[in-house]
Amino acid sequence: MVWNQIKTGILLTTLTVILLVIGQLIGGAQGLTIAFAFALIINFVSYWYSDKIVLKMYRAKPAHKSTNPELYEIVEDLAEEAKLPIPKIYIIPMDQPNAFATGRNPKHSAVAVTEGIIHLLSKEELKGVLAHEMAHIKNRDILISTVSAVIAGTIAYIAMMARWAAIFGGFGGRDNDVNIFEILALAIVAPLVATIVRLAISRSREYLADSTGAKFIHDGVPLANALNKMENYVKNKPLKKGNNATAHMFIVNPFRGNAILELFSTHPSTRNRISKLRNMAF
Picture 1 (cartoon, rainbow, N blue to C red):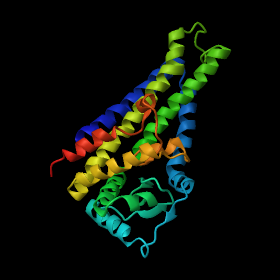
Picture 2 (picture 1 turned 135 degrees about the vertical axis):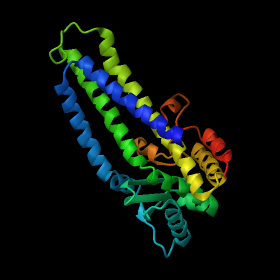
Picture 3 (picture 1 turned 30 degrees about the vertical axis):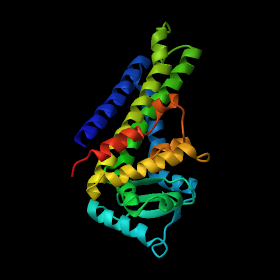
Picture 4 (picture 1 turned 90 degrees about the vertical axis):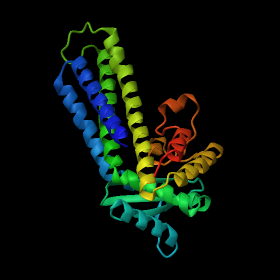
């Protein structure tokens, strides 16, 4: 758990360094400031309203205690174990077994599960999944993902401005004889690296949520079994509707990608996650 926290810090620092290097290549603080402010505003809005947006996107409806007593019992027990406020609970009308947590902080959080996951998993497996989602809330992963998105988004935006600057000549007052390798680094390499680093942060937080959630219930096997069932389902019936930009929120990627796209996956290998969970000692 400690290593995952350290790794996240290193990766966030790497994103910041890339941003500063790009600022130096552009040669002006003004453009960097404007771009950063622009990205900050966008991501600030996303941080405050993304929960409502994604819940509406997947037609999530509030779960009622009278019709979902077992679900409520699990969430309430986990909230007590994790020393967290009880999150709002939603059900998504979807056959694919999946779940996610959202909300800007533990006091304004929510967990959403699909109808498919309720039907597919045993009570203990569902508890493992919900413990993972409660761990995301506990670890404030939504805030961390927002910060990384701010920096990576800023890098991409500045790279776009650099491409236009290269086309029309000039980098904000710098000598027009700009090295072609600087332009390539600015317009292609930097945003690509930033994306990979941001995805690495997402994967690191998934491992941490697995570990934290398993500690909540003192057992990693239920979540391991649940991940195996969900992964097998997704391979055969990937989600065809929805937005790939939300893939990182789900406990398993609901959209099936090819081998090349695995490099840009928001989730670590399910096989590795299962192995780590089964080898945890309590």
